[in-house]
Amino acid sequence: MARASELGGGAIRFERIYDASIEDVWALWTTKEGLEEWFAPEGMHVEVSVLELR
Image (cartoon, rainbow, N blue to C red; front, top):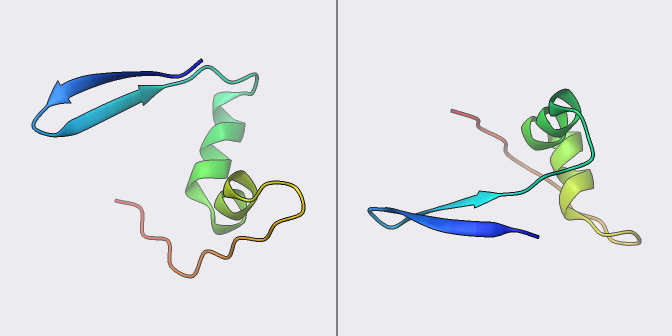
């Protein structure tokens, strides 16, 4: 179950627990291929054209 708590200044923080290692989740959220896999449900395709992590 996801929980969200307001931090102030218009920011929202979401917390989730995944049955995966930190390294696996990091790879999914910080690579083009990972994000395309994460956000595309089975049978769908998502294409990331630009990825700028700061």
